[in-house]
Length: 114
Length: 107
Figure 1: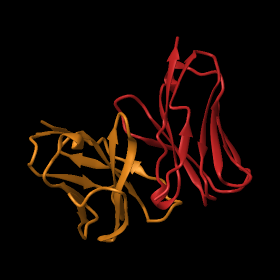
Figure 2 (figure 1 turned 90 degrees about the horizontal axis):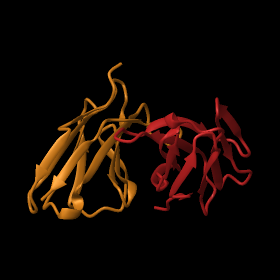
Figure 3 (figure 1 turned 180 degrees about the horizontal axis):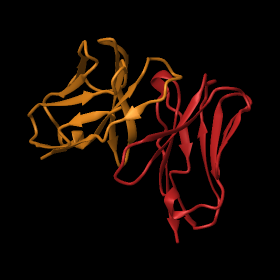
């Protein structure tokens, strides 16, 4: 099976712009989670989607939003970008939702905000 | 949500030395997972612990889940340069990932 794919891999934006990142989970996986990774903050949970419904949400401002499509592909959007949004954004898929499911991570999208 | 606390943040060892990272929670966990992220890579699942007092081994890696299911540890015996990376523990649901322990190994 193909792994989790994320596009684009690298992105450079300027403050105030918005950005959309895409994640395609492993075939058959219905849960997609998004994480922000920065050197100082580690892996911060953004949100999880399962069957097109947001199941869990982390402590991020409303500028961060996401959605999941019927084919389980997911997108996350960040509006009004700030310098502090520069990070590696990782998505992870799992077969089902719930705490006992192993997460498979994609390679990430490296976002730089200038 | 709450977050699992992980220590130490960094650990530098000489090749052949042992290494341990600890994960702690103020509340009982239904399970805990461990992941490894190599430099420049993405986290990769290592193992899941579910039972109180559970101990699992993967070659030189030993994983433990505390009796009270509030703490966990990962111990590596005789580290090798291939062990370099950041080790994360992850709690259930919105507890998510600890800050990670970054391991460097000097040959």
